[in-house]
Picture: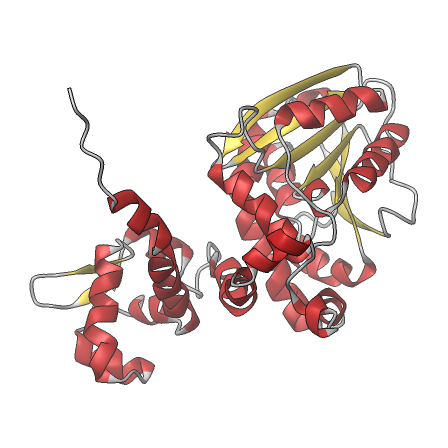
Amino acid sequence: MSTTVTPDYIMQLGLGFWASKTLLSAVELDLFTEMAKGPAKAEAVVERLGLHPRGARDFLDALVALKVLGRDSEGRYYNAPEAATFLDRSKPSYMGGMLEMANARLYPFWGSLTEALRTGRPQNEVKSGDDFFGQLYADPARLEGFLSAMSGLSLGAARTMARKFPWGNYETFVDVGGAQGGLPVQIALAHPHLRGWNFDLPAVGPVYEKYVAAHGLSERLKFYAGNFFKDPMPSADVLVMGHILHDWDLGEKRALLRKAYEALPEGGALVVYEALIDDGRRENATGLLMSLNMLIETPGGFDYTGEDCQRWMRETGFRDTRVEYLAGPDSMVVGIK
């Protein structure tokens, strides 16, 4: 039997940025927040968003075809369920912050991926001598938005970890580089006996404390200010590193694992979670693309497989290690001291 080979998939993949940028522009225009006010015809959307009529109908219908908008029999557009839940800025479930950053920063930087592959050097603000993260941490409002975006990225994994990990065997935990506090909050909500800390840079403290207070957890969740390379790692029964290790080169990854091992008591656990690349390096495209994003964004960062992380943990001294799937592209690696 002969197999018919077509270029359809290649063309879809190669022109995938068309769909991506259409969604990112919709987020930039705050379309989904506007549509949350109620269904509207194209003419009303054009007026409310200040669009030119030439491309508006194609733009809206493309979003219908991409299944983030719907259109009823009277020609009125409305948010699809996912957009209504995650892209309406007025809702606490809003996850558009990550897409806003992708639109403003990552989209243009990824245009230089070929250069990154040839040189091995970052292609972000560093190329022009700017310090994006230094400026970000100096601006409280921008920092809060960025940390909120990071929380949205990790929320599914955090909720699953709160259910799957045996927290009943422990009393204290520290989220290393915990940002706004999405993970500590989910764990504390699910396990009232636990006390936890977020170990992060001092500028993160007010953002974290505000988020924790909004969930009524200020008595059980505290902030520990510091730099995880320069300062001692806080001690607790469980240490968590979520989307942290992939930022750093192998030597720095090993250094962080050693610091965690030294801070844990006997029987304590280290939990590392990322968009782990599958061991065969064939399936988790998100993990592999995230690793290319580390090439764009960092001097030496890269993503890795679950087996890679288990090997580094065992070499550090952890006696038992395992990998467990969480949610979406994320899995966790658990090491016991």
